[in-house]
Image 1: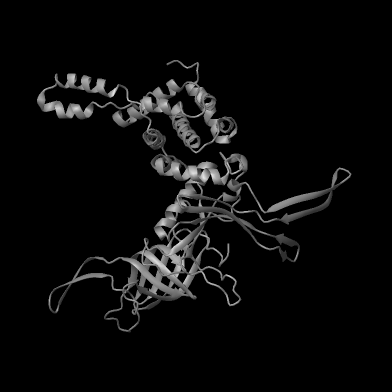
Image 2: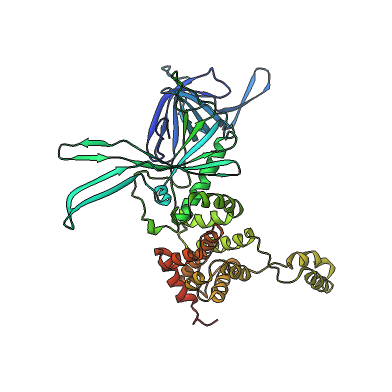
Length: 494
C-alpha cells in the first residue's frame, strides 16, 4: 500500500481550517475540527452558521420557530487537506447580539462521519475506487507474516546469536461478483531506537484487506464492505473485532510522475464510531482462541462463501454478534437474543419442513374452520399455520452440523430443544422462567448460541474434523460443551 499513513480510530487528532455549508461555498468560517479517539467529532467555529428555523409569512415579517437546523454535509479545508463532515448537528455556541463589546459568535457542531482527504457530496456520492480496511486480530486470522526468527545454537544450547528477517508475503486475492478482495502485508524498514540505557530494533508488519469494487463506490458502500469483513473476523475469532482504520482511494486521482512512473494514489481517511473500536497497539489474541484462520480456510475460499452466507443469514449473524459486542447484563435478554437468532437462522436456511403436506393441511384447516362461528373464522385462519414449532426449528438446526461435534456439545438434543423452548415460551408468555434455574438458563443461552455458530461455520465450509476440534478444544466452546453435558446429557430424563 502506498500513500499517506492511515488514521487510527483510537488516536486523537485535530485540524484547524476554514469551513462552509456545501450549498454556500463562499460563506467560510474559521474553526477547529477535533476527533477524540473514541468516535466523537466536534467542530468549533469562530462565527456561526444560521441554525435557526425561520419562515417569512409576509413581506418584512420573519418568524423564528422551535428547533434547530441540521446539515447533511459541511466542507472544509485544513492543513492542505479537503475534509467532508456528514450528519452534522449544532450542539452549542454563543451569540453576541446586543453585547456591550462586539465579538464574533461561537458555534459547536458535532458530526457522525469525517472524511479526511476529499470533498464528497454525501454518503452515497460514488467518489472512491477502492477501500483498505484494518481490523483487530486480522494478522492472526491471516495466518501469515513477513517476519521469520531464528535463534542460534552451539552444542545443542542457545549461544546468544539469532536473526529476525523480513521477507515480503505474496498478496492473496479473490474476485466475488466483480469485486476484488486482496489480503496484503506492508512492513516498515528496520529502525533502531537508541535510548540512554538500551537500543531497540523495530519493524512493523501491517495486514489489511483491500476491496476494489467493479464501479466507483460511496462512503455508504465502503462502510458496508468494512462491516462485512469485520463480521467475518468476529465470527472467526469468536470475539468483538474492532475496526482499527478505514481509508479510501479517491477515484480519478491516479497519475504518473514526469519520469513515467506511477504517482501515489490519493487517499481519504474515515473517522467515525464503528460497532467496535479497534485498539491498534493492543496485544493480539492467541491463534488457538480462533475458530478458524486462513491456515484452515484459505482467504480465496472463505471470502466468496462468507459474502454469500453473510447476505443470506445477516440478521441471525447480527444477533449472535450482538452477544459478543454488547452482551446484556441479564440472562433473560440473552435468552431472547440467542433463541431469536436460532429462529431467524432456521428461516434464512430455507429449510422446508412443513409439519403436514400442504394439501392435507388445507383439508384439515377447512374442516376445522367449518366448526368455527363465522365472526371468528378470519382470526382462527390466521392463527392456524402449517409452520414448524420452535422445538422443530431447534432440532433441525442441531441436525445440520457434524453429528459428532453436536454430540459433544449437546448429547441430548431433544432435551435441549424442549428446555430451550419452555424457557423462551415461559419468559415471553408468562414473564417468568420459574422452571429453570439461573445456571440452566446460562447453559441454554450458551448452547443455543454455539448451535447457531456451528451452523454458520458449517455453511461457510468448515469441515467436520474442524467442527469437532472446536467443540473439544476451543476454550469457550469446551466450557459450553461441559455445561451442555451437565444439563442436556443423555442420562437426563425427559
